[in-house]
Length: 269
Image (cartoon, rainbow, N blue to C red; front, side, top):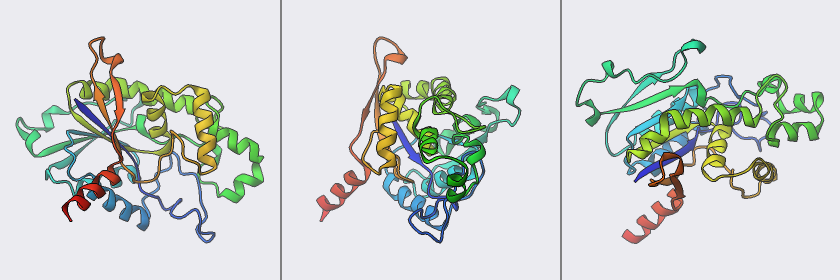
């Protein structure tokens, strides 16, 4: 039985603390913004939560905030494997992960943890809103339009991507590279971005576009939803193979990692 571990990157320098009026918030999206000091600490904390989970392969975006989060978290890992980054090509015509097996010597799986980075796992492209302060967004767009861009399934950000666009590229990548690893019983760690994690959750939980919109509106109101993805908070699913083939495989959510660790600590006291 394989395990799927999902985690959003730590807070970036553009969303370090949305509640602090002195730190104005921006959409980063496809812009390569690094982690903030808070985001670095979140990655350290996440590493301590996940250090005992055996990980066979890591998938990440091409953006530095996701890669840094994964590398910091993996530095605390019990298995002492060294992450080896394999980055996707910049040529769109040649895009798609390559194993680069010639760079990984036979037997090195005992010490090397392959970490594949792909453009297909990059954050949603927020188009004209990327890099724009929140107050500027409100000057250019109606509040209802801003909510619609974020929550609607098929309406894109101006000059950017829709949620459906992100779903299509992410799930195509998932089926091409990740499900096969789970079918082999491997434990897969995906560290990337809010909207990418959300479309994976929607896919494995079989949410419809209307379910998505309901959940995203709850998220905007800071209510608990099926698409709630806090920064640097790991959560896992067991992958149950099906005799009817890979696409019939089921994902079963594991107990909350943080709560599980707290129970283990309290049982030792």
